[in-house]
Image (cartoon, rainbow, N blue to C red; front, side):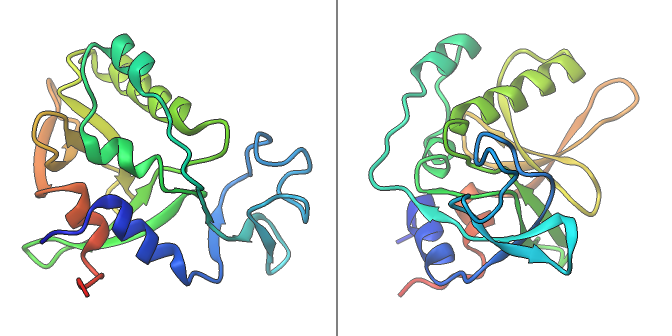
Length: 191
């Protein structure tokens, strides 16, 4: 039996001591730029203003309503996408995935921040639509491959994960894996 996104995220973040995130912290998390008062804050990394040690925070049954976003984009979102946004709050992080050809992908996973959970997904969808002219929402943007800078896309009708390569006339979707569960759970054996 395959683990769900929720089960994978719970296992992944259960014993995390800290994560290094390379970005400015959104003021929605902390009025003081992720200082000691921020729920994520663990400390600065080597006195670098842009790198901070942080910890994920488990949600306590928060359920977010995706109906307004789904109505706006005209499709129901794949269930694993919704599940991803309802397990933990966390900042951006890199997920390592080795594809069937043995190629390493460093997938920059989207953050899930308090008060900004669904908005970040909405902004990613709008950005993709504006940049490509594709308003079908057959594919939902979901992070990017850090090594190639190619966006990661989830096919909304199947849950399959693709890399989006922007071609001269029209972008191409290159298969990466069968599901978000596979992408997230490659390094987590079922117990």
